[in-house]
Length: 217
Length: 172
Image (tube, rainbow over all chains, first blue to last red; front, side, top):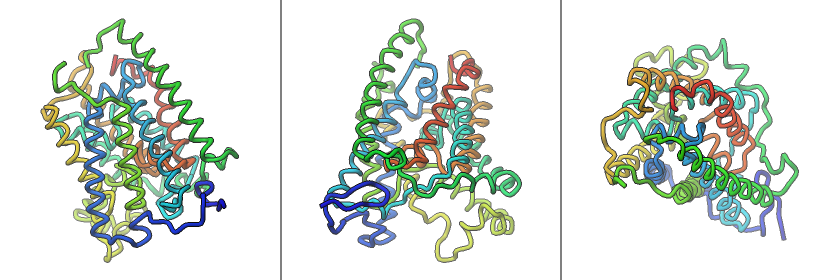
């Protein structure tokens, strides 16, 4: 028997979900924070070990000489999507009990475009800049400083510039597969195929670009 | 190849991050993030140096007026402390813990640092308006198939490709 789960398609059976632990009260707040610290260690280690403290490797995705960002990023998102889909489907974890971001499409689009400028000009994003700053990259430290000042500036101008924009385009919690009218499993399959084709194409592009010039990464 | 230029296979690195993201959702119900923790640092700092402003500012006050919950004691704050520790462990292991400026060979240190500061500033503003950054909003949002994650993906990376040409002198 299938039951419908509001944000993430169908579940196989009506089961008692084990997870998520903290939202369901299985673990207390202190343990939850400690777990957060250890998950952070894994995340930070993987970012640094993948080369994400190297600003030139990050910027390479936009110029064709290094596509590590695209490969790591899509592999991570698809791994998580498949894993969470299966956990939810087999009733191991209730996807409705996790933090599910609401969609405000206008500020996300505009904010995302501002972040695109930040990425191209600054050569980092917040997570990678923190890793870079604490492993000795001076440009990473300056980027983090800029981001902190940017947040202060956002607050100082909040009511004049951002308050009404931030709340515009509200759509609530929207699952993209449901929004497109297809099943979650099919969407994840399409996403995986698109990513596999992209991985193959960018590998060819990178070979061509780096064969003409040594980028001295 | 020199040890300090050795990196994980990108698909393996991405797989690991995906597993940690699943763990974050399974244990804590949270995605992996970064800009939320930066906001926490800002709110806590301004609350120390300018408490009257912080407790009255429309954007900040909701984070500081709860005596039960000090602003620093958030899951994301502990996660980002872990991120810092993890990055240091990896950089030490690969011999990359070194004071340096990452940049294209042809630009000066000054240009690079000014650009890094401006980029950070823009990311600070954009991540607050967009409700998260590349990790918390886009990657973790994509993991749960949230529409906002895919809109963010198109805006950040699609936007990046549109404007990359105009900033090519910084990188190539």
